[in-house]
Length: 282
Image (cartoon, rainbow, N blue to C red; front, side):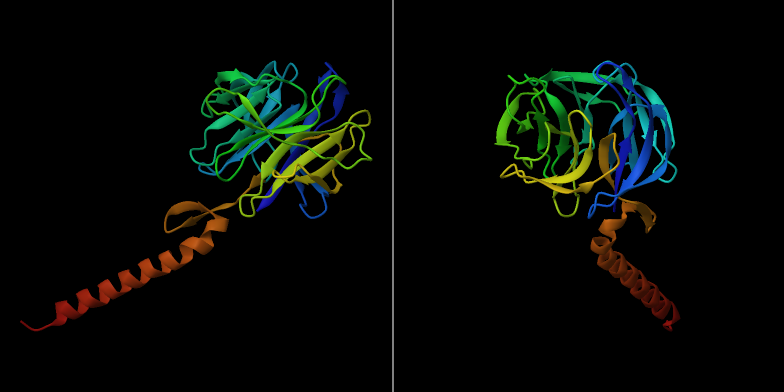
């Protein structure tokens, strides 16, 4: 299992950003290793479709919340391929139960058709701050993290979003290390096996980037380490391999192995039985 991230140069508020690069990120240290250029600018959200085995992303053409392009991304090379026009978004996340793709765009929640890129609006969350990372938990709960954009805005907060209306429900205040300047979480993803919530965190002004974890009960944000500057999207990726003619994630092989072995044993016994019966004299 690999944590991927996308980073690009930020030109400043309302000025957009530069070409995006795909990285692998060490979840123990935060160290980032470049994979390759995606070929599109401002890829501000990525996630992995576990059912289809495809890494997807959004290139924000006219700034987040404006127009965008829905992409598939080759995890081996970083190369992106355009699927179709979509909405610009701060972050995206696939729902584990059915691989429905959700997007957070300027305070609004919606879904994206992964075959065409066509967006569908669900509802207004009622607030648009800074950061705005979203992630589905392994049990299909959609979380949103954001920080104040203006001094009068609410403090850094973790919410649960209603997947049918977009309405937000308070979970807990986010507690960042005190030495960080206006920290915000711009991307999140749950580890598929451990259930730990990982986050891309940057700070205002110098946009220093860190990899962190978030305790969804207490709101405590723990820094793992510095990572590539300009990081704006993260997603866990599980390699798929064929098992008995079916493509399954590698981390499920341990679960499937006994059943595959049992199926092989049953098949072998059946063959032997048939041969014995065929040799029995009449």
